[in-house]
Length: 266
Image 1 (cartoon, rainbow, N blue to C red):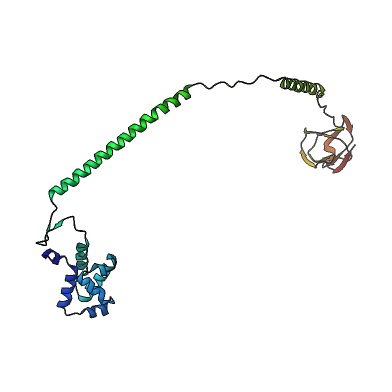
Image 2 (cartoon, helix red, strand yellow; image 1 turned 45 degrees about the vertical axis):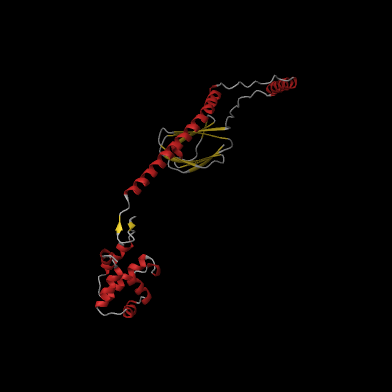
């Protein structure tokens, strides 16, 4: 392992602190509740035997706390070790890393450029063919749209249809002639017309036929005109305060001023 590898080794870091303090793996396992096999795999950085990184980071923090190491330093070293190594070539003789050769990069860039240019040309050719194929179709469609629609020709009326039409017209005329002229409704005049004129303050309660009773508070000079088919029923609060006419004829009101009387007409 290179010097830089040792500086970034989380397993070596924890192992060094543990050994310096004279703590065994079994002691760490008993106190941390982490199996000894996992602790050994952490020190050996054997990732094939370790769970997902998120769990390993939790084990690292507990491991470091138990032996008195820095948990954040252990996690930082783990992140460095787990970070993907950039594409580089390893010199088999020296064991050191060296950057990839420049000509390989040039070849990759050239291959990518050729692929892009070729793909662009292919797309352009496909679009050109589609436009050329669509042009005649569009021209045909435009010609058909510009052409005015042909007028629908109605077939000549057959003798049967002509006879049927004449028969319908004759029937309609017969119905019109048969319909009697509407006569204007003549308003029926009521049998009785009542007129009440007030001379003194009074109140009245009037029932015309079977209609609902109406109440009136009259002052001198007030006049009431009502119509009925069969009868009037008057309840007068001041018999001497009003004069009554039925169909234009005076009707005597029994009682005097200040008396309450009931008058039924006719």
